[in-house]
Structure formats: C-alpha cells, structure tokens
Image 1 (cartoon, one colour):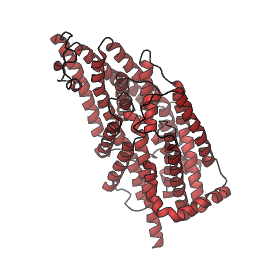
Image 2 (cartoon, rainbow over the protein chains, first blue to last red):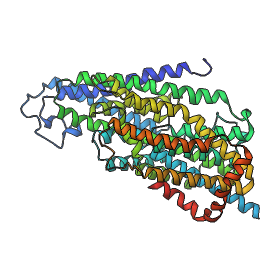
Image 3 (cartoon, rainbow over the protein chains, first blue to last red):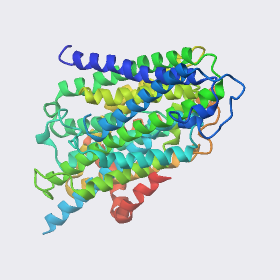
Image 4 (cartoon, rainbow over the protein chains, first blue to last red):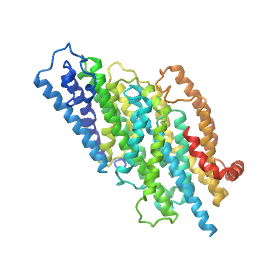
Length: 94
Length: 431
C-alpha cells in the first residue's frame, strides 16, 4: 500500500492545509470580530468590503486602538496569504 | 498526397475534439469556484461566471510549467496514436456531458484519464496501462481529496462560527462576501492554470504524433490561445446544473461557510500541487462545501445528494473508459478515415442528444438559486434513470459485428454532415 500512497506528501498537504485553509478564515473572522462595534470608517484600511456603506454601526462603541491594531494585523496576514497564493500560481510552483 | 491530406484532416479533428473537451472542462468546473458565491448572492450569477471566465483565461497564460500530457505516467506513451487520443477524448467529453446533465460535479481530469485508459486498453490491452500510476495518481487521490477538504473546511467553518458569534450579521455578511470573492477568484485562477494546460498538452501530443511539429517543440502560441479561449467560453456559459447542486443541493450555505469553503479549496488545491500530490479540483471543491456544512453548528448536509455524487465519482473512470474503448473498437472495426469520422459522428450525435434532453428542464442563471426541495431532487433522479438507460446502451460491450452495423447509420449521416457538423458540435454544446 505504501507504494500507492505518498504518505509524506499527504501528511504535508494535510498539516499545511489545516493551517492555511482553516487558519485564514479563522483569522479573517477574528479580524472582523475585533472590528465589530466600530464605525465603518475605521475599516477601509484593510477591509474594502466595509468601505462603501459607512455608518452601519454607529450606535456601538469604537474599538480600542489595541483591538483595531489586532484587527488590522489579522486582515493584513489574510491579504498577505492571498498574495502568496497568487505568487505561487504565477510562478508555476504548483 | 492524399495520405498527407487525410493525416491533416485527422489531426484537425483531434485538435477540434481536444478544444471541445477543454470547453466542457470549463463549464463543468465553473461551479467549483463560483457556486458558493452565487448561492450566497455575494455575486450575481452572470457576474460570477464572467469573473471566473476572465480569471480562467488569465490563468491559462500565467504558467506553462506543467504543459505536459495528462496521460503521462498513466498509459504507455509509446502506444498513443491519433485514433487512441480521439477515442479517449470522446470518452471524456461524453461522460462530462452526462454528469453535467445530472448536475453532478465530477472530475473532468478523471473523465479524460478514464477515456484514455479505456482507449489504450482497447488498442493494445492491459500492457499499455501503467496500473501503479492509475492507482497512485487517480484512485487514491480521488479517495483522499474529499476527506482532506472536508476536514479542512469543517475545521475552518467551525472556527469562523465560534469567532463570529455575537457579531452583527450585516457586518459579517459584508466582510465575508469580499473574502469569499477573493478566495473564489484564486480557485478560478488555479483552475485555468492547471486544467487548460492539460488540453494544451494533449494537442501538443497530437501535433507531435501527427508530425506537424518536431518532438521537442514547445506549445505553439495558437494552441495556448485557443485552449484559453475555449475554456473561458465554457466557463462563461456556466454549468448551471452543477453550480446549482454545489451551491444549493449539498448544504444551505451562508457567506461565512462560503468563505471558509473557498479558502479551504484554494489552500488545498495550491498546497497539494506544491507538494506534488495532485488532487482533483472538483473533489476538493465538493469536499470543502460538504465540510462547511459539517463544521457549521446546526447546518444540514444532504448526504443523499452527496452519496449520488460519490457513486458518480466511482463510476467516472470505468464509464469514461468504456466509452473510450467502445470508440476505439468502432474506429478499428470500420478502419481508416471512415472509422475516425464515425467516432467523431458519435460524439456530435450524443452531444446533441444530451443537449436536447437538457432542454426539457433547463437550469440557467435565472433559476440556479431556486429553493432546493426534496421533490425536485426526486425529479432530477427520474431524469437520471432515463439517461442512465441511454448511456447503458451506448457503453455496453458490443461485439465487433454488431458495432459495425449499429454505426452504419451514423457513418451515413456523418458522410453528409461532416463539414458543417464540425462547426455545429460546439454550438450544440453552447446552449
């Protein structure tokens, strides 16, 4: 059976897949959660989706600078991962 | 002189058929990238397929690193001739169209591999097939891909669900829509890069076998161009039936699940190729959608729909193989150019027949998002039963004599329509 399954490659795919494939959505969700409660004008820096509709959540308190920084960090990592994915496609390394 | 002309004609037929396969590959696989974005209304249906088409087109030009033949390592390269390539392609196309008719997302690559393997088996017997390659490159990945994708997408969805609890839904919807569009775009791009190259590889192989280009030639520009355009056109037309099954049939999906599923698909597809463990785009995408239902607390997964799909996956290789083998038998029973034209005629006629059947219950961008109810599911099953019979007739093992007589009418019709028929085939597929 070991002739038919490349266990090494399979393991790498599984581990990396879980880290990236589940980690990115989780980070994205975390970023949004940290942003939640903010007015939309804090968002455009990293989250273009929030830009076109300002004032959606004006009643809720603004996030602390720490939360905002955390959110931006999360979303930057996500964008970075997408850029890396693009780079992998373009460089034909797959 | 006549021989040279005949050879050119055969070569042209193979190229046209390869482009037709590329086209079916495009519209069969649109759903892999865009079904969830359409289902969650992150994108309008037409916008989604247009975006996917453009990205497939761009993707086809991005990289030629793997413009090798898909049959490499699976069948003996020595035995591949133009008739074998044609028979294999026809097997792949017919299976692709049948599964599209039933709205089942099945792997286009497996259909192609199945067709090729069947054609080679019919041509030279079991010695022409590298069975270890078939098992390790096709069967095992087919089994593992959905499992990996379900695990990844399930975990991702679960994390997302936990993390976004209590966050206002309009905020998560807006955010995740963009995330979903981004990750779906990445899947489209990767599909264009991977799958268009398979057709390019086959056309290159045919050109070399036909002596049109030297054996060490690179992929000519017109081949890249025509493959990219054929796939983009197919993608733009949209396999609405498959999109509907993926987006509405398996799981009722929201934007958070859609984003998690598409990210999982993109990550697993790119990583698996990166680590040299190639997985089918379709199997990964389907597994991801299932996983997003498994991981979401309270979400319902329609396992009956999934079960029907798994059956189709298991059948893909043997069924496409049978069609491929049958086509090769027809070719050799009739012999020469006439046999070649007969097989091409079989392709045109069965494509047209499948298209006619599909018109009875059309699925397009207007009704792709309609509610999925169990009665409709049963409806689709009824259609499955009738086409299954038709398919069974066609792919049943037929003795050579019977084949010759049953194909007689086909040859006659091909003789009269072969000129316009060549043009009519893609149009028939188009609608």
